[in-house]
Length: 351
Image (cartoon, rainbow, N blue to C red):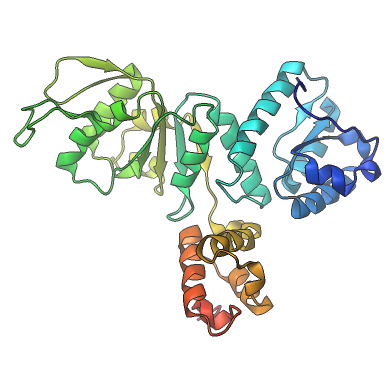
């Protein structure tokens, strides 16, 4: 399973040198190397210094509580000893895909790293994924990450915002139409399902999909075939469906606005992106990313300590989108070289 990999073995935690970790992508951490608390503290220290490092504890059946503590510290998965070569091969495959997509998402917090590990696992399947989270948490970016980690990154990725398209146009856009299917249909048009064939279709804001179209979508998901409006021929599909919503679909079902059978069809592999206020360890790394994007050549040292405290203390109701807008505005409006709290335009706590 380690073919093509460089392997470095260390007898204990003290034998793990900084040079090893700087070069490493994946570290198997045997639980027998120390007590759970010492291992957990070591994990937090390593991940703070090497945020792209993936740590996998290897535990005996009786030590699974130790594994749970290490997962809370930021480990993304664990192996139960004895394990098979195939299990290691699967981990290495997933890690290779993740390394190729390393710049797609910023997830330094423990919850973010666990979410990323889950996304890497579901990416290797073709089952539907439902991504939930507040507005601005990065649901579309997560969908693109799953697509890139799927092993078919060159295949099409097609996104449709179900809330942004008028109901009378949405059916044609999703399923396509033949010439003459309705007034104005002067030529045949492939729908988004056809355009995404072989790849991934993101149905963003799926909770806004009208009930009439929900039944047709359910049939397409069940049959893996689509028929254009005005057409007589079914087109076979090989499409990975990712749905995203900022609504609670169970509440929508209870209110009669969403079909329960469609929710269960979509909710095979659920991923929930926590709001930024619940993963504050991601705030400053995200700020660094945005500074590099909007002010190339300048770094996080632009932030004063008081500006960092202001960023960490804000609740970010608009989540990552609000954070990026705030950083971009501060870069333009700052008075002087450094970004001060006043340049961020954030309300003071309690105001």
